[in-house]
Image (cartoon, rainbow, N blue to C red; front, side, top):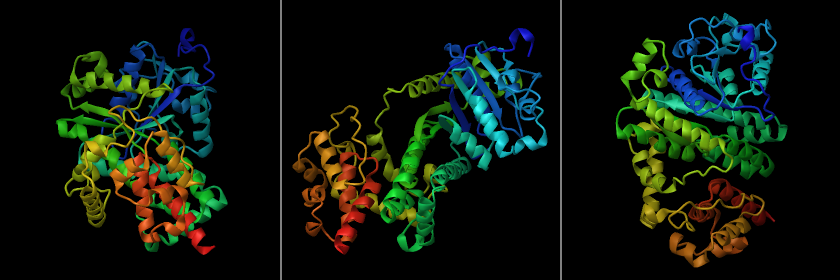
Amino acid sequence: MDSAHENPLEAARPAGPCVWAVGGGKGGVGKSVLTANLAIALARRGRRCVVLDADLGGANLHTILGVRKPHRTLSDFVSREVSSLADVLCETPVPNLFLLSGARAFLAMANPKHTQKERLLRHIQMLTADHVFLDLSAGSSFNVLDFFLAARRGIVVVVPEPTSVENAYHFLKAAFFRSLSRATRHPGVRMAVEQVAKERGDLGVHSPRELLARVLELDRVAGAALVDRARAFAPLLIVNQARTPEHRTVGQDMVVACREYLGTELDYIGAVARDEAVHSAVSRRQPVLESTPSCAFAKDVEALAQRLLRIEEPEAARPDEVDRVYRHRRALFSDGSLATHGLLSDEERRAKLAHLDVRHAEHALGPDERPLGASGGRRPPLPPADFEQPGAYLRRCREFLGLELRDLFQRTRLCSLEHIEDERFEELPPEPYLRGHVLEYARALGVREAELLAASFVERYRRAQAA
């Protein structure tokens, strides 16, 4: 950089920048174009932004942003020719936006060593910026996953095509297990996970969600450590190149599928239209928001940028999607659903449909499936889950929502609700039925950790029976 622009981002921010990592399982889904234009949208709102081309084997952000020949690149930082990432910052044609280019990277940079990666991540947090966007390479190598998990929020980009959806699930599962692996560094947690993995056929463990539940049954402390790690895994999802209204609903369906299968939350923040203006802008080496600010793609990106700002705010309101989730479930797990392509086997799909049919026979799905206590608006957050005393926790949630037992009985038709709350195990049905009763009760209250809470309850039941 010229001496006049050595430190374009001047004052230090103690908290560090908000880091967004943009990834996905498949190449060619438009991650780089989205990354560049999201950063531009925030820069236009007065935020100081940096885009880092972390696709170390095929960097191209400089071309998309119209920066022809970066004077300094990440290679200079990794090789220690410069001591700070601030020395590698490159100005772009967009005010408030700076580039950390991966262009002209040497071959070894595609797979940096652990120490190099840690140093890069540490210096990213030292950048004086409001937002840093990491444009990751395709695939799910450990380096890509580590960059994704190091961000404040990871963003997964998918296009509404079977191969992209399938690869996105592969990426999410790999990132989820990479996140859980940090908890398994503790010997007790690792032993519990390994034992469940060995017996997964007999225990009926077919998904990460079921793995968490079984570990919690086997070892409460180990299970709690995994649950805490799972809660911290909450990527965002963007559907790119949407051509029809149905394409825009794929994201919401994937949210439901991840909740059912992974047992974790995926936050769908919107879709971006397929637009020929994108191809034209890239061909001219210009950002879309600069060359064609009124096109459909640009409008969608502006809306996404506004949602990112709301997510960054600690008290930002998050829409309750429960109603739409239930309305979509039957179609979601039907044969031919794009959103679950490559995620479930035919047997698992049939099991999901059978479960939904049973619940539909008990009480119709739809608006009346809204968690009790919601009065048409956003349901207040429930107290933190207590796996030590699951029965007492369910009573606390019920009272928190201002409900009587008869309200829950009308919803669930379960006569065991009071016995569940009091943990009067001698009055409860046998174990094969008990888990389902507790699960139904917890879901009726809107408990997000319903399955894990049911597993904890069953563990306490077994201990009481053995005493």
